[in-house]
Length: 334
Ligand code: DAH
Image 1 (spheres, rainbow, N blue to C red):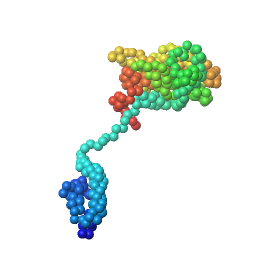
Image 2: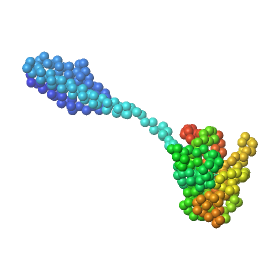
Image 3: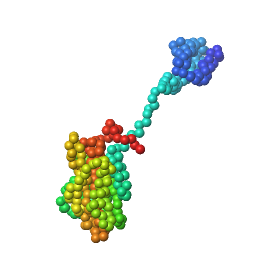
């Protein structure tokens, strides 16, 4: 009789010691122990040979065995099925690797860097300024006092209805900040983002400009022309034609706009690419630079405009949509 009582205990030990190595082994285990003709079936059937007073304990023992078997199966089922899948996965060593996709530089970054490099060769260094500006630096110091009609040329974004704080409408305020901070000679360019409430295929509310300024004794309009001439040849090629047209900017006197000749469907067209001029003496005075001792030239250009010309892009919005098919066409990052 006692050996009958011992049997479930022995089987429990067997179950606890069992460690399946594969999902098949686990399935065999399941059939052997809890299958319809399994060991547990026999153990339960054995109950009729157990004396009445021990039936309860025996029943509990066999239940324990059953639970142990089920627990083991559940525990290994998940583990082994994962491993099984992994083992069945075949590695094809002849397959090409995942490749490395180095990405590309944004066309605006490419052009901005080219502009910087060209002026760097001419001895310009970089100056930066804030994108949130005050009225003084964005307008007044640049000879655009309140109510000056030229303010309307720039559709300004104001911050929190405070008429004194604006998103800078151009990079010209960086000239003012630089002249306020340093004594001449000053020779800097300022690349940066600017903001105007304007939005169509050739205008974006956020775009990039590069400003340039050179202040020293006896700086002349001829030097300005020579500098921009060099810039155009470097940027657009040796044979590019250019012309200066008289224009008006409140911060320069005289002022000009520069056009380059462009071949549009076999026809020569003039495209404006920048504004420039000799720094107005009033602007120098606003920055405590003596206009009797110093003169200077300044210029400002839109990076998008130049990138559109160079790459033949008709719609400025393509630059900001982050469409990978568009961006991939430009040179890889270096
Ligand atoms: N700030 C002008 C604009 O945004 C561009 C410009 C024109 C800058 C003439 C200059 C300049 O420095 O001399 O339209």
